[in-house]
Structure formats: C-alpha cells, structure tokens
Image (cartoon, rainbow, N blue to C red; front, top):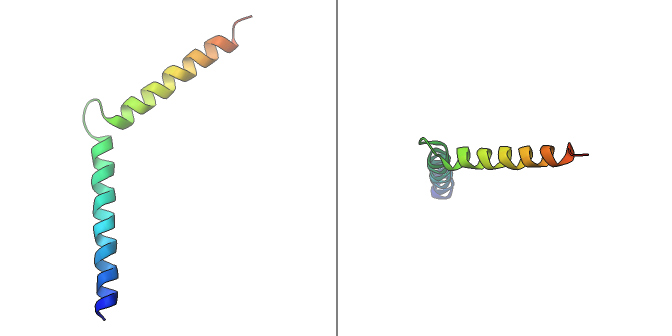
Length: 54
C-alpha cells in the first residue's frame, strides 16, 4: 500500500513543479513566453519581407 501512496505523492509533486514552471513563464508584463512570441513574430516579419523582394 505504501508503494501506491508514494506514486501518488510523486505525481502530485510533479504536477506542482510543472504548474509553478508554467506560472513562472507566463506571468508578468514581459514574461518569457511573451518574449519568445515577440521574437518569433519579429523573425517571421523579416522572413516575409525578404521573400517579397524581387
């Protein structure tokens, strides 16, 4: 029975760590996720500008 309880505790701990990680990268005015999407948008804009040149 204790092995089953240990697996349940490990799952809860894993979910807590993942939730805290997601919270850390998505919160704040200049979050890491927002910075990533801004960088991707900037690269895409440069890419489309270059393709549109004659």
